[in-house]
Length: 414
Ligand code: CTP
Image (tube, rainbow, N blue to C red; front, side, top):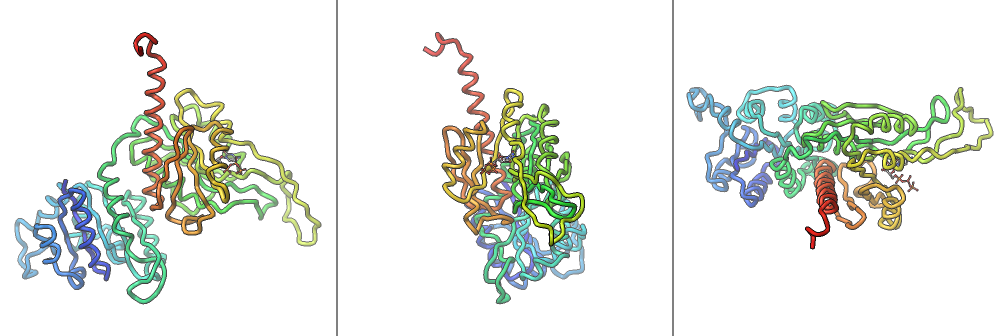
């Protein structure tokens, strides 16, 4: 299977050679396209030697002037038969050009012309990475369906420490393989996903909330939509952009989330409850802002357990996956939740681990069912979303087989 690695001009360009080798180890036929700036860091000869293919370095002939009749359409041919375009490293400049739809060189032209998935592994200086222009370009590209493989934090070539280092090669390979194997395996499903942290108002300006960013829930919504499902995303407030094309239902409180979920439950074939729902709410919400000199004791009352109600009210066959964010004895607590709430599976999140804690772009979880506990190691949340979906599908298949066996007459089993 043919894939194309696009190399743009940053110091991490040398790591693209390692990426090419790692992709070849997955039995992929790797072709390379380089921007002019990339050629200042690494020579095309490096990639030609590794791949055994001519490296495409520009839209025009080497003399830079005479257009070649073949090269004029090469980007279309190249774009049509590659199965994925992976740009690594993707500089701030190429992200900006892609976000604007510019097509001034071979790589950007090909990115516009290809119907295949686009994966972007950015690498740059920490300030360039966090600049609002770069972040806005990333948001645009993400919304259009590009898969962003977020850079990691560490020492950068510029001497600074922070986000901006090219993601580990194995992450880029894993995401590429997932994209290539992406099937339409959720095509017949309507999936209800809850995300974000609910807010319970105390007065017109204050609320009881939690530290959930919503990233895991949004990643799941996007992943399952890409795998063919119709998605309803019911979300408490976050700073995230809902995936394009899903039915988006914004809510604020646990009570609003409960209503929105139960209303839409009859049409759902799978419910994923990634939201961090407040367990308590203030018994009363003050009409005016509570003043500093008011003697204050907060009286709280419990909220309804939405997950428990979903399990009780679901149609037969609707699968329910809950989440458990735990800080101590994670397995015991998550198992208790699985049984108490009656969910088909619980995704256990150990939030005591700082490297994968709240608001992180990476996570590691355990997918717990009544009979299994599958550890899904640390990886980007978008990749993890696909792994959680794979396990969910495997669980559905197991349930179907068990149900079919239960219908087989005894004499046929003997
Ligand atoms: N949940 C829910 N409704 C609530 C509280 C939680 O639907 N009122 C769901 C969450 O969306 C999650 C799962 O239940 O999928 C577990 O949430 P968690 O807060 O970990 O569990 P609790 O039952 O609240 O238990 P505890 O806070 O005691 O750990």
